[in-house]
Length: 293
Image 1: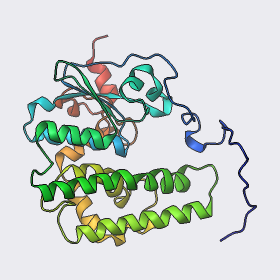
Image 2 (image 1 turned 90 degrees about the vertical axis):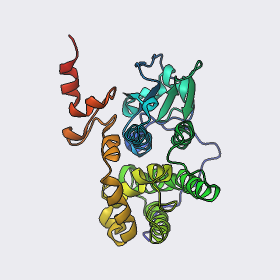
Image 3 (image 1 turned 135 degrees about the vertical axis):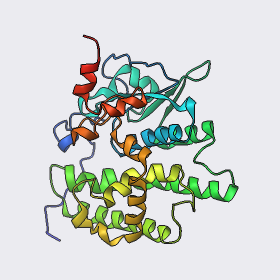
């Protein structure tokens, strides 16, 4: 390891607005809204406010899977929240998610709207609401929830840890990258060993565990995150690769990955989603062309 001057923490930490790398403009040490902004509301029972990051993809995939399974009440409107522009700090969004993170869901199917924030909570809410993708057998349910919450605890090490220091930090810190690369590979090994034993994480059935874990670890395995495939030697995790390929082939996964996406290949973008036919429009310029002037 290369020696560097030792950092001595100050007695009192002071926020440096310029010391945050790529996300310096949207990170801050306080909560609450920064501006007034009313969120749009569509005609469907479920209103999703999100962005096609791994956490956002989880919920869009869940909703598309529910619709594919024939759950008519799962129709939804998906509205983009541009976290780079600070949309998550608007008053309307903060009212749904006081933590100012995507995704957030407003369930308007009952007499009183219900807000749900945190992706795992949204997946669990929808699974219980529609009685889908969460086994009723106690042992299988426990296994599903264990992997769901494993992802909640593990992903911050992958995203905020490895991903940040490897791809986004303004300075490359050898110790930080080594520390989190080791943990990312350990987590991939955890998954690989599990998937050597069963087709899916909780057994023979596709569940919300897949929806939670795939956007992060399947994305990493398939080279969709951080440009780190070679660095982490992700091809070595054969069972994770098999599992990721299986999920990528699901039409609902393909659609869910497009929802609220406004970057990358134009044919894979769908900035807003209000109807199944929107997937035929694909790009925002086509969406705009369909709207009355």
